[in-house]
Image 1: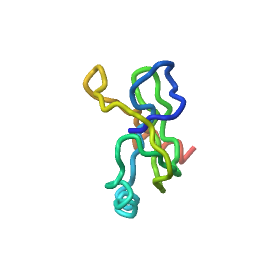
Image 2 (image 1 turned 180 degrees about the vertical axis):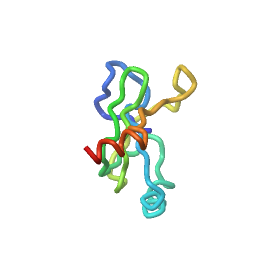
Image 3 (image 1 turned 90 degrees about the vertical axis):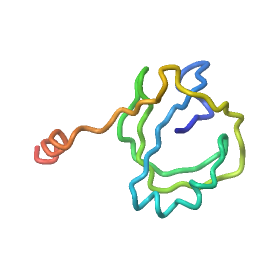
Length: 101
């Protein structure tokens, strides 16, 4: 989960983006990911999977990630409802129909 410098929600304290990785991308960048600390600045390349809304984070699929200079003071906290939610991509049937249209 990522907190952006300019949050989507005014006064929002929670995460703005849910960043996911495929298994090969996770393995390729595990050294960077495993050494990240809360508040570290990162640079990443990702594809938008779905836009979030009031109840869901924006969901992006990452391909590259790099730790860069800088740190942001981010409070470790839990979402008020107990967990964050991502908007998932279309299910396989919908995706298959889109490809064949």
